[in-house]
Image 1 (cartoon, rainbow, N blue to C red):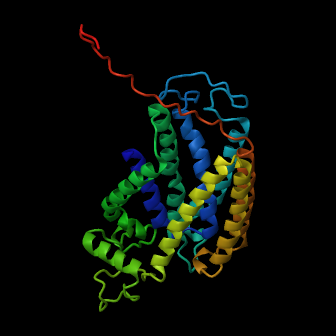
Image 2 (cartoon, rainbow, N blue to C red):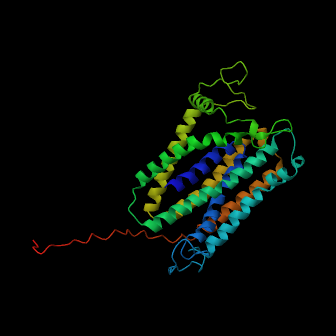
Image 3 (cartoon, rainbow, N blue to C red):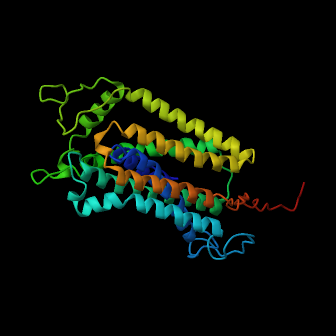
Length: 337
């Protein structure tokens, strides 16, 4: 449970820190990298995977699975390849900007966007590792688990770990925004831990001053103004959305309508990309011209194609057979009852 909580916390913290600087349409594309990474990492834990070191070897009579590919079918492998190509193509502008900032350099902070985009995409690694390790743990221990209790324990662990690692990752807010005079990791110092926590709570409650001037009540002066409008309602709405999505997915899966779920995922990708692109039109930091927008559109088409191919065949359902410990050996005396 501790390792799962650590991986989930790393994924959550990095996503929150870097997500602000990532082009909205690219967020929808980048998060899909978790699917092929999960398929890749499962090769190290699945009994029929390419690297069978974590689990004992067993025979898996899968009808459509490719032998030695961890229960994956041809559709899963092809879909994973298409999804990976879509994500990698979408990262071309960011990679070119890191190598040569003058290519897209204008009046917008493209270097900051590029670095944060790459880190946001790499954030799929701990997310996929956590997913694979959860499946591995359930298969190894095979004990009855209450989903509500498990989620509660994981949430408590994540909250505690977040409190501990937040000061360490606080300087990442300045990633890519440094200059020759000031290094990027000095823009958001993590030395005043309590001050950072208190100002974060005040921002959440909407009591933090809008202008971070020297004369304001805020002790630290950063290169960006704090935008705390409707912070608490947005957090509550985000939490409720996660809960409702989890309940909906659980009901759909139990009803056996997985194809409806996968069609909903494809439709959700289209709606999300269009909505995020429209939202980004008001922000000059994410406007890089028709060439980049056309690339994102092509990547979205590939993303939908890869998702459809991947979900054309369902993954083989794992059987979690409970293994109970043997009863204790009772020694009877001569005078048995």
